[in-house]
Image 1 (tube, rainbow, N blue to C red):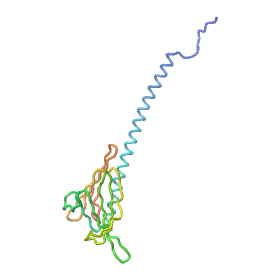
Image 2 (cartoon, helix red, strand yellow; image 1 turned 120 degrees about the vertical axis):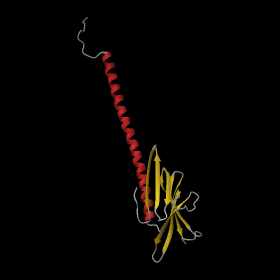
Image 3 (cartoon, rainbow, N blue to C red; image 1 turned 120 degrees about the horizontal axis):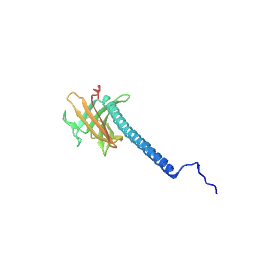
Image 4 (cartoon, rainbow, N blue to C red; image 1 turned 90 degrees about the horizontal axis):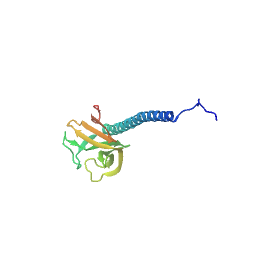
Length: 183
C-alpha cells in the first residue's frame, strides 16, 4: 500500500475554528443590525407622534382663527373662569350663507385616549334649546392630555401631549381668533 504523506485539505480542528470565527462575526453583525433596527423603530415612533400633535394643533388653530368666540370648559362642561385650566375647548364659528350667518359650536376634548372634534349647529347662539348635532369625528389617537386656559383678553393657551410606545411629545402655545403666539 502506498502511504499518503502530503495530503491536501483541512483538518477537523481547522473546520471548527473557521465555524467559530463565522459564528462570532455573525453575532457581532446581528448585534449591530438589531441596534440599528430598534433605533429606526424608535425614531419612527417619535416622528409619528410629533406629526400627530402638530396635525392636531393645525386643525385646532384653523378653527380658532375662524371663531368668533372661544371658551374653555371644565370636565363637567361648565364654563371655566379666566386663568382656570380646562380639558375642553368650545369655539363659536360663524358660517356665512348667501343672505344670513349661521353659527356652529366646535368642541375639542379627549375621550378614551382619542381627541374628538364635535360640531353642533346653533340655531340661536344664545339659546341651546334647539341646537342640532352635526358630527363627532376622532381627530387623533394616543393623545394623553389636552389642556386649555383662557385669559381675560381672549387668548387661549393650550398644551397637547401624545404618548405612544414609550415615546412622549408635547406642544404648547397661545392663540386668539386672530394671532398665534407660537410654541
